[in-house]
Image (tube, rainbow, N blue to C red; front, side, top):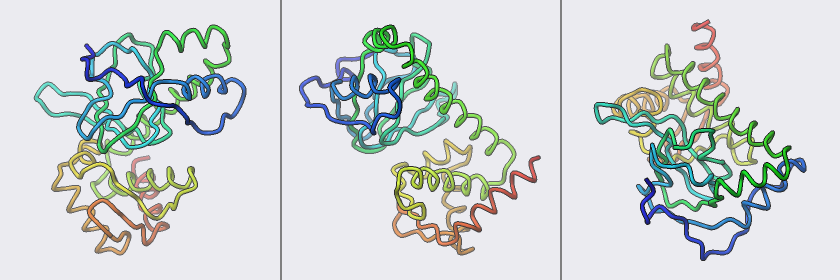
Amino acid sequence: MFSQSLAPNTTQPAVYLRAPGADRGEELDHGLARASLRKIAVGEHAFLEGAPRSYIFKVESGALALYRSLGDGRRQVLGFGFDGDLIGLGARKCHLVGAQALKPTTLRCLPVPQLKQMINANPGLAARLYEAISEELADAQDRFFNVSQRRAIERVAFFLQKLSHRNEARGADPRVILLPMSRADIGDYLGLTLETVSRTLSELRAKGYICLKESRVVQLRNLNALNELVDSASDDVE
């Protein structure tokens, strides 16, 4: 269940979202722009696994880890929510994952009943939500394929490539990767231990693929070689 601390802050002004594409998404953009603003600290949850799905969220700034808890107390990170992402989507009444802030994060919170009203008034809006959910599914399938049979160096290269592509799609430098997550978070995403992630980043640095500017800033010195490493691993799996 949502605790009182998980309720959105409704006192903040609202301005945001990327420019709308088609008219099917314009109403969602406007609805989110008027939605309540909520700020959460590092380690705080936007929502808990198993909690009622009362809102969908737009990440205005910050980053979150989307994870499921395992029976032995460990967790499996299934993805990350960055600025511009919609999280909390789905057809279930309860959240299947938890969403925990990796850094101070600002969210827009749109109540699910309001979203349903918007869809009823504009059925084309469902197409945009379908695209968002499809992207989430494709991301999960991509992650499963790329971590199931690959070596550690190939998994970490895939992860860096993924973030590089994200930067490029948003007009940011594809060669400078800011990591809001810890090495342990990366390991929970890639199925590796913290020590293996750290050792593999050092290996990539020794090979001249990357430069570690700071603990959470990675510069891709040889992006072509990194891409070739990921592509060659795909050929090996096939």
